[in-house]
Image (cartoon, rainbow, N blue to C red; front, side, top):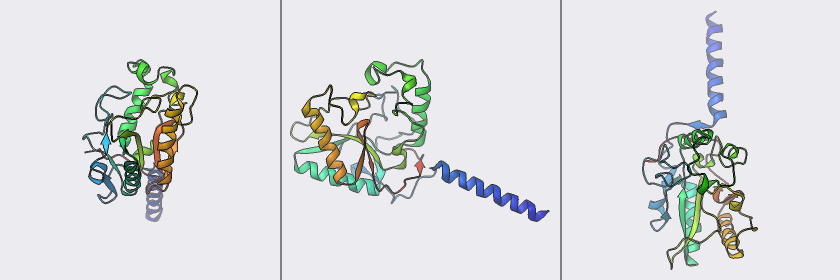
Length: 233
């Protein structure tokens, strides 16, 4: 009898462990050596931390962003620095909107998307899409590559004018015009700038998300199955 109880306990423990692996999530932060602060790695890097404040599609500061910091895995940070260094030689630089994102932030997005009565940001961020379709069209999901620590949202700035280059659509615009290969309603120069960003990122190991010209994930990311939930602080 005791043996059966022990065996059943071991099965339960094994199942719980398997569930954790399958869910691919963790609450505990990784080792400090696993993540880097991008501003420490690249002091000249510009940023516009939309989710730390209210200038975003939800319209409020997002849960988990407790400090104005940009964190990425060490591998992703090093790869991004290579892009920054190369662009600087051409007279440009990167501006980052978002990097590591806690799972609780994605949960905040989900809660917002499920509330179809809150459309206060519709005109600015999803003018041509019904809020209920944001999931089906791939703009909001239950898991985000950002939570794995090797995904980044960014654009290009001119070092001479200090201005953000015009890519033809604003960051986080949920619309077909934000597709990297969209050409119907943007200029040739705007499309060329999107391709400039895409090719420079790909050269240094990044992969683009076709629906969002600003979104890139490191191909050889160190935590491909782990969705972290430690806050940015």
